[in-house]
Amino acid sequence: MGRSRPVSPAFEAWRRFRRHPLALVSAAVLLMMIAAIVLGPTLWPVAINDIDFSARLKGPSWAHPFGTDDLGQDLLARMLYGGRISLAVGLAAMAVAILVGTLIGAVAGMSRSWLGSALMWLTDLFLSLPQLPLLLLVIYLFRDFLKGLFGPEGGVFILIVAVIGGLRWMPVARLVRAQFLSLREKEFVEAARALGASKSRQVVRHILPNALGPVIVAGTIDVAAAIIAESTLSFLGLGFPPDIPTWGRILYDAKDYLDIAPHWAMFPGAAIFLAVLTINFIGDGLRDALDPRKVM
Amino acid sequence: MGSYLLRRLLIAIPSLLGISVVLFAVLALAPGDPFEELATNPAVPPEVRTALRTKFGLDDPIAVRYVRWLVAMLGGDWGFSFVSRIDVGALIMQRLPTTLFVIGSSQLLAILIALPVGIYAATRPYSLFDQIANAFAFVGFSLPTFFTGLLFILVFSIWLDWLPFVYRSDISATGWQWYLEHARQAIMPIAVLALFQAASLTRYVRSAMLDVIRLDYVTTARAKGLGERVVILKHVVRNALIPVVTLVALQMPAIFGGAIITEQIFRIPGIGSLLISSILANDTPVVMAVTFVFACLVVIFNLIADILYGWLDPRITFA
Image (cartoon, rainbow over all chains, first blue to last red; front, side, top):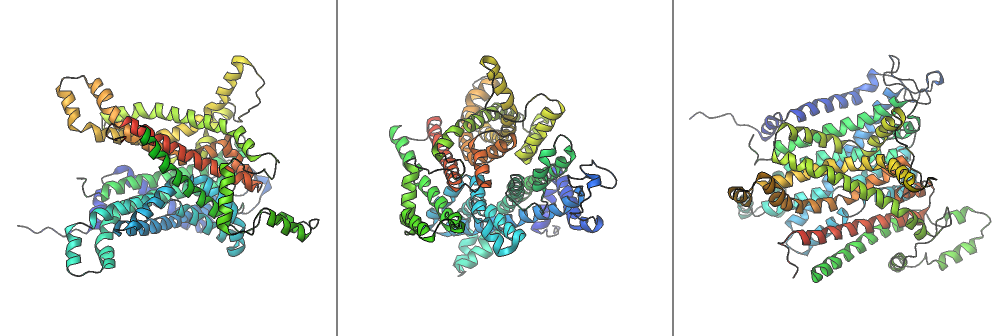
């Protein structure tokens, strides 16, 4: 009997992920976008606030590949800069949502007392909150306070990340709790318990790693949702201040010039769409790759 | 049925209370003071300000303030708008029908698109049609509503010049002309919302159908010699739609979010655009009231879904 080479879970997931062509293409596109955002400003060293009234509202050209806005500012440079913020908000909000969701889901899943049902009631309550109105309300009420505390950029960043993350943890909490409820009764956990593993060791070493698959998928989708939420706020004029050109903010500024400079709105809109679409496809690919029941 | 209804209503009340606590907590924790304007106004002496604070009970303990606020909200006393000096309740009532019309028709359109596409795709899983529908669904829910709205305006209003992009409530035409004008200006906002909804709904319908289509009773129905059409429409769809009802209700908060954006883009005079303009104008009573109305609408739609669920699913007992 020949012994096959041991395969690590990560490698196995990658093997399965490759079977999803759209997810693979999406991963490549997203990596290119991230590379452009990270390296872009060094390769395209044009200032984002270089005002040039002789080149107002110009379409794409060699000098300005994405055209210019109403002040003659280079759109490519602004989008490369704004992309950093959009992606940073998406990732940070996802981290908040995953952290809070996993914590609440784990506590609710391990608890055998009233605490579990109380936490789930809280989760359901948050699920039935109207998110965008609440998001707007919190930002409306706390914006100036945090601006004073952390500066205009940092304050808005912290606020947006906290609020988006704070309103998106519920699906993760439900997933984690459901996983915990079934995993905690499994034999391997019982074995760990019999060997005298403490409750925290059972959770951290045995239950949590096995519950992570759906959480990773949910986290991926959350990045996309957070990017949309941030652009929505910026688009409504309630996100970052005007001098920080996130993609949603550029779109907000562009919407009044739709008839004479459609490129101004199309490029940031397409960027948001592409980022969200690729992330959603990657989430779909990961769902297949991380589901052990699915034969691939 | 009566007791089931009552129980659902009793479950809805604590969640409404919970939402009101969250809203009030947000308001109470917020820095700043509703009378800040008076503080900076040199014409108002400080004694008047303290008198006003006492009169409106701003120095009372938070629990007392919450109960008073809740009683006022439930009693329909929502205060006055800082900006237009109109009763907030009247302001919202004036705007609410437009929002409900847009949301309702877009929901209807979304269901009309999603049901046939989802059902057809599920009867031929992994076929070309299924894959195309799936790809379109992904595109649909990855396109943010604000971008679809701008795309629609660009294509249908600016390039083709078919549809108006500003929603007007003061159309002067009468009779059929009036209805026609209203329909024309409502097409784009409704379509934007409906496409976004239809995308995720199609996937739900498809997966719910696939869950049911494998069950034994479907095989039995086929074995009895029933036609495929009857099996799908009478046996599978009816049961597959039960979870879809819940999902539609769970989507309601997202739909309201989409409605706010659409109203803002197309300048529809609904409560969503009222919310945005009040936020930009620092009109706190209106902001609070609109958020509360949105929360109530979500709870009401969840309640309706629960009731529909009980009616559709015979396994739920009413006892």
